[in-house]
Picture 1 (tube, rainbow, N blue to C red):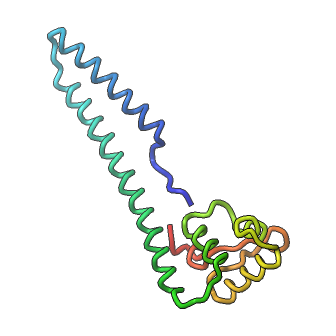
Picture 2 (cartoon, rainbow, N blue to C red; picture 1 turned 120 degrees about the horizontal axis):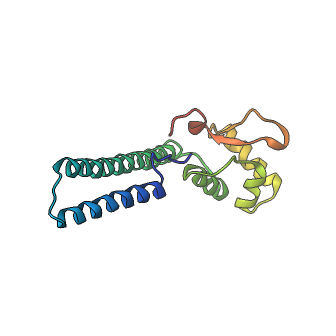
Picture 3 (cartoon, one colour; picture 1 turned 90 degrees about the vertical axis):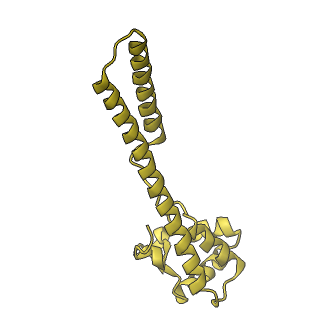
Length: 155
C-alpha cells in the first residue's frame, strides 16, 4: 500500500540536471551576444512543468498521508470502548501504520513476542469483535486484514 509517484526521486533529479544543463548552455550562448527568446520560453516552460509536477506529487503524498491518519483516528474512535490487550493494540497500530505484507499468526508471534496459541486467541478475539477479517486462504497461508482496509475504505 505504498504511494506510487509519477516520477521517482532519481528521475526528478535527472530531469532537473537536464534542465540545469540547458540553462547553462543558454547562459553561455547569451554571453556570446546572441539571444533566442523562443528557446528561453521553452526552457522556462520546462522548469514550470517540472515544478508543477513536483507540486502534484507533493499534494498526492499529503493526501495519502492525511487519509491514513484520518482512517487511523476514526478506527480508534470507533473502537474506543472495545477492550483490547496490549498485544492487540500494538499489532493493530502496526497494521494501521502500513504493515508490509500479509498478517499471519506466525508474524503475530514474532512481533508480539507471544506463543502461537496466544496469537491465535488474540486474532480470533479481534475477528469476533469485527475488527479483523480472515482472508479466503486456509491452512499455512491463512492471513488476516483489518475490516476497513479489506473492503477498500482506505487508499
